[in-house]
Amino acid sequence: MSKLYARRRLSIVAALTAVVASAGLFNGPTASAALPTPVSAATARSYLASLTVATENRTGYDRDLFPTWDTIEGTCNTREYILKRDGTNVTTNSSCTATSGSWYSPYDGATWSAASDVDIDHLVPLAEAWDSGASKWTTAQREALANDVTRPQLLAVTDNVNQSKGDQDPATWVPSRTAYVCTYVRAWVQVKHYYNLSVDSAEKSALTNYLASC
Image 1 (cartoon, helix red, strand yellow):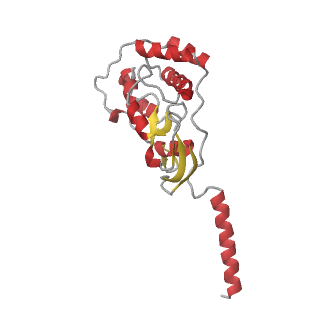
Image 2 (image 1 turned 90 degrees about the vertical axis):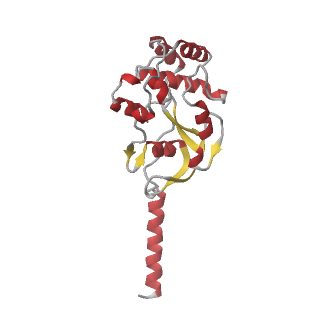
Image 3 (image 1 turned 180 degrees about the vertical axis):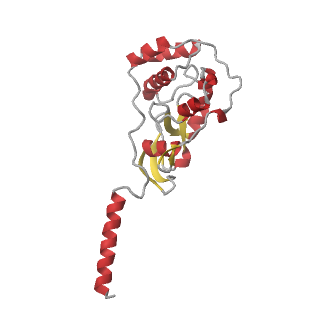
């Protein structure tokens, strides 16, 4: 093979590689929009008024009753999908594991450059859902809630913030970043309304107060 021919082949391969890379074909599925926009405050207030008020009951709860991280797009499971959706300049390997990118946590305003510093929060926690009616659901229904990327139920946030939230409802926990509280409670009510989950009296009172100032 002549040196000239070899150089031409290398140039063609390099050009094709650049085209493929720019198209994102090495990076797994294309990122979707960020967290689905919650309903308006007025709609959230209407939804809240329609929710059943009931005492919560956690008897029998086990997180394994809510199968999580389904494969939902290509090789990506739900966690990986949300990391790509909520991140900036996220690249993934062939298994859809995030290898680089940055993630802004709207709960506390922090930005992270390692996916290991980010949790995927179930905005309405799974234990809270169990307490509010999901204990009566089928496994398939609980799985749908745990992997719901259509409603504003899953969000990439700072890991220790998510852990401090735990299973609390808005009567005892809302994001420390006050600019996000209205979005948070609107999303909370939307998810509870969609899945026909109840609220307890303290939770409803807190939601009512927050929504009044949205």
